[in-house]
Image (cartoon, rainbow, N blue to C red):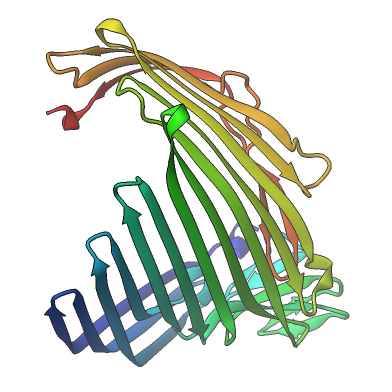
Amino acid sequence: MADSLSNVYKKNYFTRSIGGGYRYQKDALSFNMNINYNIATLRNNQTFPFEDEVKKSFYTFLPSFQMRYNISRDKNFRLFFRTSNNSPSVEQLQNVLDNSNPQQLSLGNPNLKQDYRTNLNFRYMSADVPNMTSFFIMFSGTMTNNYIGYKSLFASKDTLIDGYTINRGVQLRRPANLDGYLNVFSFMTYGLPVAFLYSNLNLNTGVSFSKTPSIVNNIKNFANSYRYSLGFTLSSNFSTDIDISLSSMSTYNVINNTIQKSSDNNYFNQNTQLKIYLLFWEGLVLQSNLSHIFNSGLSASYDNNYLLWNLSVGYKILSKGQGEIRLSAIDLLNQNTNVQRNTSDYYVEDTRSNVLGRYFLLSFIYNIRAF
């Protein structure tokens, strides 16, 4: 049984690149553009449980472009364009059946190619110094050809694939190069002072969309994922010895599949934090971080509403206070469940990972920045 789950595999990936570029800078405008010719060689050697060797070479042009324009001293925007390649992993290349889960088998694909990614990014930033306000917005998009996705087969009868028998009712997944991957992301934040609280307020929001291709029983499926986020951070600025911040981020996720409708799902997450830093007389430091985690749409058996509280007391030492002896209580309320949702083209999974739970830590911190 141990041999059936074992293999010996070696992967070597070599890249060579030659290229050139042009750079321009005058007054408020600067830009540079480059183009590289990339040669990648992939060599795979498998010696157990059987011998196999694969050698491939890939030839690609990789252009890139970057521009910055300073509208004024306090306003500027940047534009980035970049292309890149990623090679398949060892697990994706191994032509060995993974039967650790008898109902969900996986098999590598030695014929995989490297992907080709195109990324475009735009950023704009402005600051109003007299009024102490700031604004930042970003858009980013990535398209990928030869995206390394997965082909899933649900065997309706006993089927022979590459010398392996897939029994009826069993699922087999294999990586494959697929076109159509897309990821688009936007983020915006606005900062302003709150005079009566002697604090700064940052408001932020974001929207993202991703389209991930897969093949289910020889039919192409797209998993369309939408993510909407809204949050704020309120931080104090009335004293160097007292730092208080309150922040919250709410995220709503929607996942729709064109074929695999059983994997459609919606869920909500909210993380609210209160952080307090107090420096008392003669170097005594108190720090508190209280987080409230709320999840909606997960499995009923998971705790969707809990508190995480980390508390510490420290004392600064040495001539400039660069050293600190600190006693910390981690997860003081012992409520951490570490719940996470994972989604794919063929399943929705809620997981709970083992964590230490409540524990105490005595530590010594030396801050180099104190120099």
